[in-house]
Amino acid sequence: MGIRDIIEGKKQWRAHRARVEALPPDYRIVYEESQKYLFKVGPVDLADGNLLSGLVEFFEEGAVAGKGVIELIGNDVAAFCDDLIKDSPTYADIYQESVGKDIGNR
Image 1 (cartoon, rainbow, N blue to C red):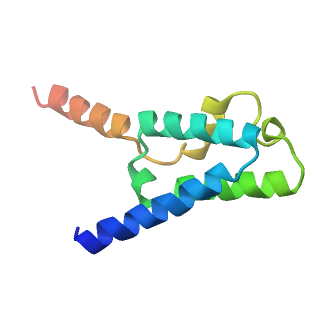
Image 2 (tube, rainbow, N blue to C red):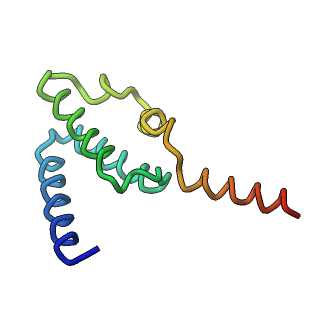
């Protein structure tokens, strides 16, 4: 990764954060909690940027439609996030798989 890639990545992240900051307060709070959860759970493809930007887009559309954030995602942020990544491998899955292989090789 070169310096240009790093600079471009920072520009993209700042633009993403500006979109988050433009969300209504309730949407912004739920986005922040979702982001924290996703960073902890660690879907492997989180770094490609599509999941978080797609979430912001989903929230922007909901806000424009006049819907409340709870109306869109339900009462459980973690369950909503789990549903978003249900078909994505996580770092925990990879670790669990490697531990299973290590035990099987003994």
